[in-house]
Length: 317
Length: 303
Image 1: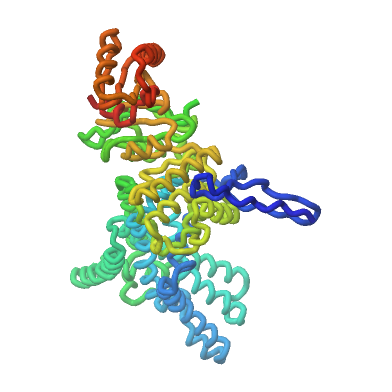
Image 2 (image 1 turned 180 degrees about the horizontal axis):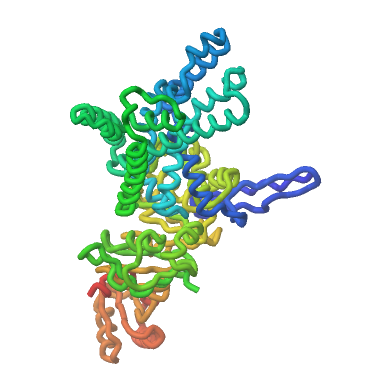
């Protein structure tokens, strides 16, 4: 094996540029041994383009929101939320495995009712993720860096929206899906492939509906203020406040359909409709059409508001 | 072919006209984009990046129109912003890797090149540190590293020496010069400091009052029609006598102590000054072509 000669020491009389010496040969190939030289060099390989940039942004943003490659304090909330979301499902599967079938059937919630156990986790991620991803970029100047890459405002928002929706899906689709898989393996799942696939479709559709509504709300609020804390408080305020207003108006005016104003209850009510299950008693008299219209309206208006804010935004550079 | 060409660029914000018919040709090497704060440099950089539409005029970057090919252009550009407030809890190597991936490099290649870029700017040992714990000088180097990690054809550096002390500033300028020369990466350096542009740039575009005041290769601009400077090792009386003799033969002069500045066509006045000095038998300390400073050019064009 032949080694490359060592790099000579720098000439003390030569003024330093503050830069390490340029790389010499890329590699020396002597039989089986290859010694790669370290150093900056040109790159002639493939580039992933705008699609790759969106994917990179989404993955990086999801990692950031989940606290990966960050200090321990940034992991506390995400871990807590994921535990909140998956713990009930794990407990139900354990109970189904340990209890006799007749008790287990009584004990296990329906897939739509299961959202009642994880709604706190969904709210927490709704309030936390989009402010962390959007407000932080504007406050730290990262938005200017992103918009100097192949991303533009539209594709930047696409990446951030995907990241927000992806993390919300972790707690809107993930837990019921886990429940379905675990119960199926345990023998308490749906009867046959047909029923299984139908349930899978309902779980995914329900999760996407809840994810869509809450992603749009959280993106819209996060596009409105640079302050993370204010955005988080506003998201919680809007969801809870709309719930109070919706219930109050529906009961005061005796117009059940006005409950659809409640962004607190609407997503769960829609999940019951998708699963074709009996809704909570107070939603029985609410028609499906206004529910769908409000859900679609909130999602579209939220995304349009987000785009409009970013379209007009003066980016700091 | 120029890297960046602009003709009659106009940019308005409401009733305020930020750029009012800017023409520019940015060539290979290091080009200084100069102008006072608020002159429109950052607006111009934004238009080069395709982030602001041009209200009037045309602009071409690397042969493309930024309005229609913004992503393609930005893939081959590196950009270091002026501000220092990068995410404080992110390690430098993660930040540089992420920016390299955004510019289209596959993950493993981006990770390798980010380490190499940080090594190049002198942050090999510091690359795992969160950027919030770094000094201003180190953050400026991180910004340079993220601008070059994806191997751009052209990098645009917005006030890269802002916040640095004189020693750090010189190091940063040498670093930029070195990156440009060793790796053939062209540089647009936006600055309001004439001295630093003069120190490392090959070309310059000076913007003022929304228009182009001066542009061209620095050597050409400084040399053009400047004249000759003669410094005598003689008493002041002898210096003044020579100045009067030069004036008498139609060579205009200005005197500053023992130095006479002669303006006019270099080749003509150089010979005449040499002949007059020799005829008078005076001792010459220095005789050289006069070089205009950027400050001279700037003030001259501002009127």
